[in-house]
Image (cartoon, rainbow, N blue to C red):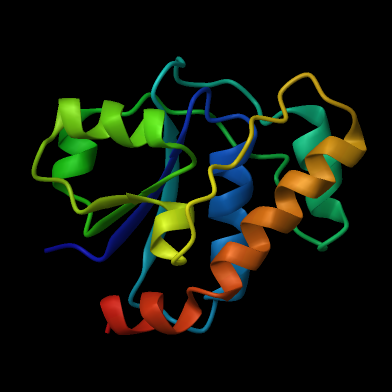
Length: 149
């Protein structure tokens, strides 16, 4: 099975691209993992939101070249692990591909928290969202490393 980790949100312009970029930064030393993201309700080719780009600059991560992708069953079939931002996204993943090894990012990090959509919010809203995603990823590093050995 390919070693692909996919993050899923709604439009693939805010939360999942931030999660993808943060995970690539945090797990940069693990060359076994291919990390990407997609949205359950988007079209291919949208740029990341301006505030998502700005929030990640705080982490010295460049999100300017991000381009949104619509999730597909083929994408899910090729993934080793799918992490969604909310229970609703998880439900959408399971409808498309019931066999997906999928969880919310919160569940994967052993919490019940969903990641609120910052879309339309100010930069501080995006920074809070980014910090939440980063904390969940950091608490899941060992689990992710073991999953993708």
